[in-house]
Every structure is written in C-alpha cells, then in structure tokens.
Length: 103
Image 1 (tube, helix red, strand yellow):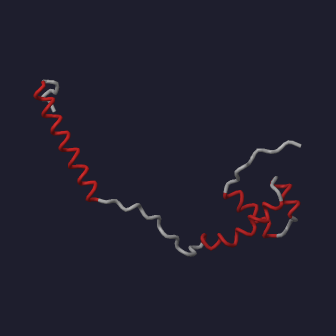
Image 2 (tube, rainbow, N blue to C red; image 1 turned 120 degrees about the horizontal axis):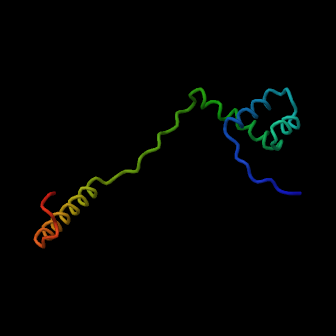
Image 3 (cartoon, one colour; image 1 turned 180 degrees about the horizontal axis):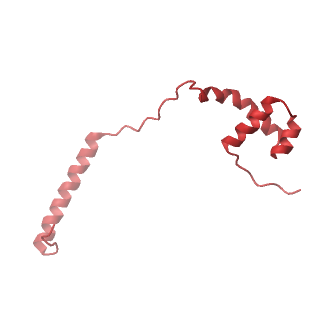
C-alpha cells in the first residue's frame, strides 16, 4: 500500500465539505468518497465550522497586529553618525582628488 503525499486543501474547499456534512443529506462515508478525503477529516472540519462562522458576520473584532515599537531616538543617533561619516569621507576623497565635484 503506497502512501499518498500530503495534500493542502483550500479554505473554500473545507467550507464546502463542512457545509455538505452539516446538511446531513449524505453520510460521512458518501461525502468522504465524493470529496476524496477521510471521514475523520470531514468530522473535524464540520466541528470547526460553527466556531469560525461568527467571524463571517463580524463576530469578535480581532486585535490589529501591532507594529514593533521603534526607538526614534536611537534611529536619529544612527542617522547623525552616518551623516557625519559620509561628510568626513566626502571631504577626504575630495582632497585626494578621487571624488568629482559634480555631486
């Protein structure tokens, strides 16, 4: 008996199978054969559907992912340091004649 490679089902497919299972028009065995998934998987999706259905109709608002806080003071210090280094290197290269005056 050969093993089938792992399959990833789309959320739309999962919802379709779960709705068919909730309707109850066919048995789990028939649905498993029709959609080519295991009956245990259909049972799992069927139990997950009521939990996620509230989100469709604006259930609990999910908190917005917060952006990591940025230390502005540290960034300004780094900008100042890099500006100072660029000015120094520009002056040194100009004196050595390696930097054109077209900048």
